[in-house]
Each structure stands twice: as structure tokens, then as C-alpha cells.
Length: 110
Image (cartoon, rainbow, N blue to C red):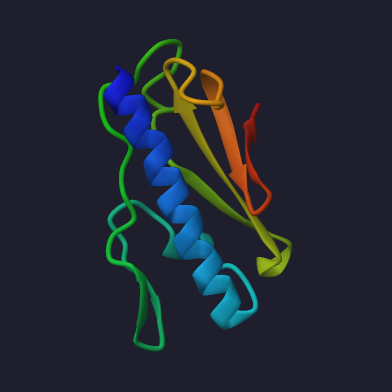
């Protein structure tokens, strides 16, 4: 469980880095359909992430199978985003349960 949760946090941080690079080049965050597990995040021949990762399985702790995914949502026509994901146990400074990543960082979610 600890290694799966550590991978979840690492994945989210990598996705955030790719999103920030994308934002810096394109003055906005990508559409929701462009940030789905398995998709390459790219535009105009520039690749920001070869493949958006999928959450490791199985779900851990109080997380359900449905919550055990990375769910990206573009906000305000590309001005911001959220990524929700679930951790089975506290990992570093990230609490267990559903969490949310935004351009401002990672915080406890819903």
C-alpha cells in the first residue's frame, strides 16, 4: 500500500509539472479529454508527457475503486484545473482519502 500511495503522489506531481509546462507555452491548461490516462499530452508537435499515468491498483484504505483514478478537470476555460485522486494512507504531507491537486499545489479534497 505504501508504495502504491507513493506512486500516486509522484504521478500527480509529474502530471502537474507537465501541465505547468503546457500552460507556460499555451497560456492555458489543456482540455479534459487531453489529460486522460494513457493519452500523450502534446500540442503542435511538443510533447509534455508521453503517457498520462493510471493510478496503481488495487484501491487502498477507504478509497473505492471509482475513487482510485486520476480525474482531471479544466476550470475557467483553461485558467486553472483540478486533479482528484485518493490515497489509502497519509503519504508525506498528503492526507489519506480523496485529495485534490491544483496549480497552487496539493490539498485535502472532497
